[in-house]
Each structure stands twice: as structure tokens, then as C-alpha cells.
Amino acid sequence: MDIWQLAELPEYLDPPCWAVIAARLLLSLPFEEAVPQVLEYIGEAARADRTWVMRFNDDVTLLRNSNEWCRDGVSSHVADLQNVPVTMMGEILAPPREGRSVAINDVAMLPRSLRSLQVEFRHQQIQSTLTVPVHNDDGRLIACIGLDAARSRRRWTIDEVHALIQIAALMGVANTEGAPRRKPKGEEFSVPIYLKSGRSARGVPVASIASVRADRDGSLVGLRDGAQLADDRPLRWWQSVLPDQDFLRIHRSALVNIRLVDLLRRRAGGQDLELLVKGCPAPVPVSRTSTAELRRRLGA
Image (cartoon, rainbow, N blue to C red; front, side, top):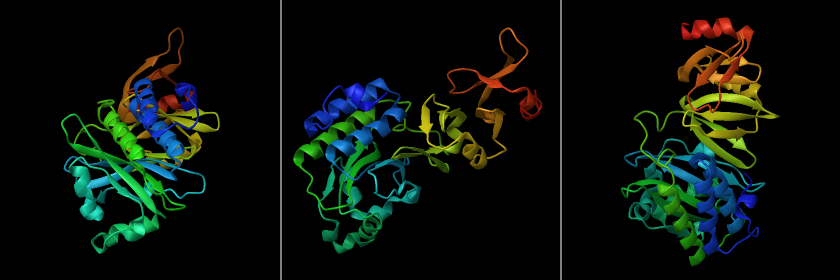
């Protein structure tokens, strides 16, 4: 669903309206599909160069960049910030823990106590940045959402800060099946793989991928929670990077995670087989050339 069709409002809106658009997206789409669109919308509306979501593990000792949107010509750093100790943030983490936002209008003016963070900001070409905490219903810090200015310094307005606070509050309660929730131990920070769609990037654990299907020149990645996410790369790319012990190409247009197969059965009215896979909205057909290997892998 196109963000502007959903909004049915002018391309750029004053900050007080940003939360309205974010709420429509979060209410109309599965959480993990809505987040990239929310980031793109506020990035364009705020005329920022980069927008992002950083998620914390349960005890707030590690952080990872789970979603990122970048303007054309602005570098992406989603892959650089995975399982990073929060100590990198230094004293700047104290306000988000207390529910307060952090607006940095000039990175060059950061105090010496934040030298390591300043170096990281410069590595990302950040000149100004705004960070807002995301808390769940229990008041636990689970993420931060932010805006970066990379091409020139800027002063964040009170309206922009308040708008991002409202969006963070919406994200905190939007969907208990989405990312802002407590995940099973060992799943939350498993090694991610990055989905790329246009100027957006999002990291997902390999174990959460249920299927990958060809979709024109790109692919449609199905997660075990039911989310269906577009990726710009073809199916053959996914076949080359996903682990062979877990994934099998069962059709010229589909890869599946063998560990997430629920049922192998014959298709109605025929001899061909199909798979029911966790998170997939419809059965996945099995080609005859793949049947023998599939049965061997499933022990069927």
C-alpha cells in the first residue's frame, strides 16, 4: 500500500500531523511492514537525511539497528550497528532510560566525555541528530527512533521533537507481535540478514525467515510471524546466502525454511505436492524435481 494513497494528504505536513500518518500506517499494516513506511514518511516530512530504529536487548546492554531509511546519496550504516554495547552511547543513554529525548543540534559541540560517540557520529557523517525513546506498556525501554542530518547542521524544533515522541509512543504499543516485544531468549539478537527495498534497509534474524518467493525482478520474504516483506534482490541471490542445511529450493520460484514446515501434502485434485509453512499465507507448491530431496530432508 502506497503511503501517500493511505494518507490522502499533502506530501509535506506540519509536525503535529506526523503522528496521524504514523497511526494510520501502524493500524493498517502489520507492525514490521509499517515501520519502514513510517521511517520513510517522517524522513521526507522532516527533510532529514536518515531515519532509524535502534532496538535493545532485554537488559539494555546491547543495541542493534533494525530499520533504516536513507535519502539518496546518504550512506547507510545499518550493518555497522549490530549487537553493539550500549556503553558506546555513554551518558547520552541516561535521558532515554528516563523517558526523555536527546536533541543534538551540532555534533561538533559534544563534550569530551562523549568523545567515542562523537567519533561514531562523524563516521556516519552525522552533523545533527534527534533521538526519542520507545517504551512498552510496562515502561521498559525497548528501542529508540531517530532522525539524522548529514549534509548540514540543523536545529530540531519543539514541534518536531513532540511529533517524534508521539510516534514513539504509538510504536511502543502498536503490535505485540511486532518487534517492540520481549522475544524468546536467544532469538532477539541472532545474526541478522538485511532486507533492502528502495532506500530502506531492515535486519531480520535468519531463523525468522520462513520462505522466499520470486516477485518480478526481486523477492518477497515471508517471516514466521506472517509478515511479507519486499526485497530488491532476486531469488538466486537468496539461495546463495541462506544456509543450505536449513533452506531448500522447492520450486523455481520459491525457497523454504525446512525447520518451519508444518505439513507436506498432495494438492487438491492432483498428484503434485505442496507445503504448509509457518507464516506463509498460502501453500507453497513443490516441483517434481525437488520432491525426493524434500522428502529426504523432512524424513517423510
